[in-house]
Structure formats: C-alpha cells, structure tokens
Length: 317
Image 1 (cartoon, rainbow, N blue to C red):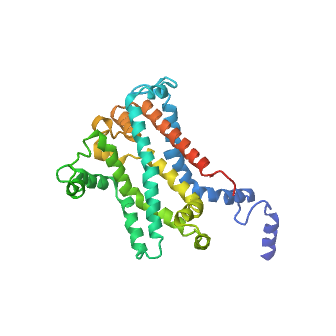
Image 2: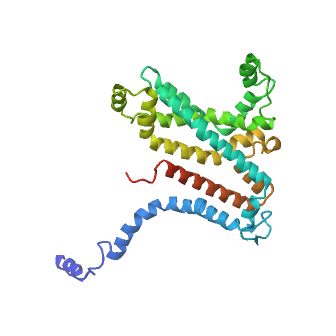
Image 3: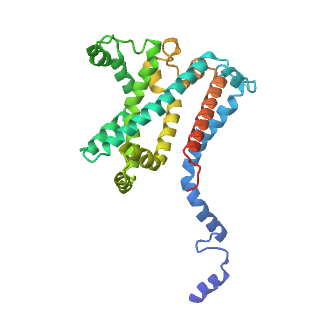
C-alpha cells in the first residue's frame, strides 16, 4: 500500500501544486487577488468620473440641442461664443466677485475667529468649535429657506432686528440687483467662516508659543509677532484654505439657485454653475454647457496654481 503511494508521488508532475493546479497559475492568482479587491473602486471611478469628464470634453466641440438630436461638430465655436455671451460674462463677474469676497472677507474673518479661540483666557473651546462647525453641515435647501426668511423685507430678521433699530430703511435683499450679491456673501460668511476658523485653529496648535514668547521678550509687539511669526508658520494652512475657498466659490450652486430661482433680478445673482445648469438642463444645449464647465475647470486650475506659486507651494522643503 505504502509502495503504491510512493510510486504515485514519483509520477506527480513537479509543475503542479498539491491541489493539482499549475504553479504558474497559483502565482498569477496570488498576484491578481489584491487588484480584484480594489477593482470596484477603479471601475466606479472610470464609469462615474473618467468617462463623464472625457465625454463632456468631447461634447464641448459639438452642437447638440436636445437628447435625441444629432451632434454637429463645430470645433472651438462654443468656446469662442462664450466671450460674446452677455449672460456668461455676467455669471463670470458674479462668481469672481464672490470668490474675491471669500478670499478677502471670509478667510481673514475666519483667521480672526481662530486667533480669538487660541487665547488662553477663552473657555469652552470645544463648544465653540462644535458651534462653528454646525453651519457647514446644514443642507443647502435648509440654508436657503432660513435665509429667505432672514432677508424678507417686511418681517425678515435682518431688517427688523438690525436695520430698523438703527434707523435704517428696510431693504429688499433678494429683489434689489445691488443687494443680491451682498446677500449671498452674507450667506457664505455664515456658512464657511466657522469651518475655515477650525482649519486655522488646528494650524495654530503647531505655532510655537516659545517663539512668540521669545519675540515678545525681544520687544516685538502683537502685530509684529502675528505678521513675522504666526503668518509664516500658518502658510500651509493659509494656502489650503484659500485654494478651497476659490474652488468652492466657482462651484457654488445650491444657495444662489435656491434663493433666487436662477439668476435673480437682472441676473444679479447668476453664477457660472447656475448658468451651466440652465444652459444644459433647461435649454438642452449640452455642447455649450460642456464648454462652460471646462472654462470653469481652466479658471479654477489657473487660480489654484497661482496661489501655489504665490505661497511657495512648489518649493522643496
């Protein structure tokens, strides 16, 4: 009996495993298994990111009105027409206006709040951090409903609690073309100041208190300590927050669309994302809407790279 088993063992093909499978096939399975586990992510990424982005770029060189209509190749005509389109130029101006307010109002205000929270005598810091984080979690629909009530002319909170007690007239925030953009900026201040303040607060934890104390001993005042010590050490966080503010400004859609139902009076609140939506899903001009989307990509990429250059983001440490 044992001799038979030995004979069988001698006759076994050395290239086969104990289970009768090819050793090369076993090695292949070991190598391919990890890729099979991570393949759902890459399949989803290809289907829902790479394909739509590539298709939109291809579509931007065509004219298509409606889902079932034929595509007509027109080259760069969509891109050339954008700079002759008054509504697009107005949307570009409004979006850039909001982006400037994000960089020069919301970001400095967030930094000021973070500096206040960093003071030693401020108590209940964890409560304030939770309080400042809450607006970002609020859905755009809820935000729009809330601020519609706040901006209402007759009974709105802003007019009756702030302006009227100061002897100022009630303002038509969402119907006056001159006040539409300030109103949207106020919404942005409420929603984004807190989360940006938390970013800065996290960065301030890494700013050496010893360096600040040493500068104070050497005779530096608070402004000099802030400008020459705090700001340089906060540079990575500052770059991160500004780039996010620019990207978020050019991608803003929910609040202006829900508050104004489109562009508002005289397109005073028309954003590029809103105009893209109106062009693509109301007028069914998919090629032109794709061109708008790619112009937004170029603008965001250019401004982000410019910020990296200004803040030394490409410098080797």
